[in-house]
Image: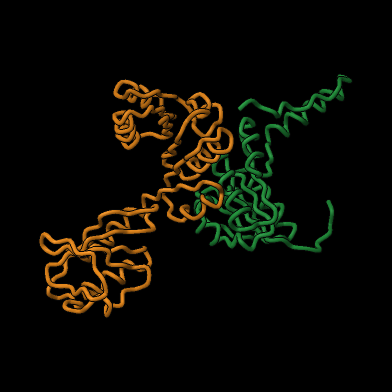
Length: 155
Length: 220
């Protein structure tokens, strides 16, 4: 682990599922200030004891909610709910309306990745990452050439 | 006109019925299989089962040569994405997103979706306007509600009776366009005076509407 603690950032995360909570716990432990937004307050149980940020119960696609989270002051916003359209809407509002410098959205369904890209939203797709990783390992063991993930899905 | 309606429920049914009766060609996209069958039995429309926020489904619905896409699902974010895909991917000339959160009326245009209809705002404006003044009839809202034309009957409580219009200082962007007196239609000028029973046709913008109406009725 890199131990540089030079800059603490203000990070808003939408979606307190396993991925969102894991990110929040890690970032909070590294000293960043994190605000977590989720519609279901039961999901906040996914946060560890190390999480020292804020919890906001509500719909992150509402501008009022993002403003309450002071997303307009955030350095980063990460939209990782299991709802692709919600992630896409939140990411666009954060970037275009609130001017958040770094915005990343999770794509659950790889078929939607092209749309995210067309709308200028940076994405992370856990399924494609897992696919790429597995393929890389298969290639390493079998000595095959590295197959790239089929990302240009047909619309 | 070829219209694609994405969503479900009775509103979609009655809208589509009205569109088809006016001769438009309608395609409905709904995620609910039972509802699709229900629509298919009752409407002269093409029904597509699927998620309208997927480009493939909009393609099936014929978005390539649609004139209008109306996104009226219960979720604002879905309606945003549907309109964005319709415009950018398929070049649909006109899209309309229906929203619940009134903030999205200003948010969505920044994301490229120009026509946004907020049910919440329409209803609340309607109720606020109707609640106060009984003599007021809203005739027409133009330019997506940015211009309002209303008819107002002057009662004997009106503080402006007998005054020439030139002396009535209405707020900016408010105008008395016409005075209906019995059977006469008066296009007023500065010297026109108002009398009890006159019905004035008032043109306002939302910011000045309440103030203009209060000035003419004297109601607080």
